[in-house]
Image (cartoon, rainbow, N blue to C red; front, side, top):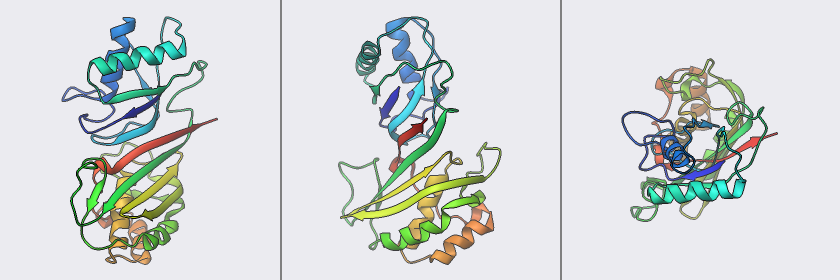
Length: 244
């Protein structure tokens, strides 16, 4: 299943006891029309407030379903429950497929609105940076120094459960279109809060408070204390997951 959701009302992807989750919304929808208790597997668990336009998840169902009817049934139940989740596509896959372990690359987008007036329509869907005029070209130039395989401890959350801080970052691009700055990041996998940590540090470059060398020094420090402030969750989108 390719899934789109507004992360604002949810405590993240993963089902939990202290609030609504995207996983629970979909699992409840499936049970509502099929009667089956299912447990979703997902390409990447997103945090509270993070959005998705191309999340990928899979479920195992006892009954054989036509892909179109399955999508329509899930969306009907999600709509009845007033969930901010939509199933964009459903596809039958073989038993070797796994939404997480079969993934070859994950693509994220982070959106910044750099303007003086506050956000109305884009509130909780982008980071509002009101001060100054962020230099997206400087941000992009600095970001290229982080492309490759590095120890990203500086840009890793303290609660990250990854076995190693070493990751290979394949893309980190910054571009401006009017008042919107987009940061696009791609890798096979990311550390917890890695993209938001990178964006928070790149913002300092855009403000002129950090240079490219300062960003590299932060990476080489291998210390989370050297990182810029964590960018808000609501500016982040999981936009695509690649498979063979």
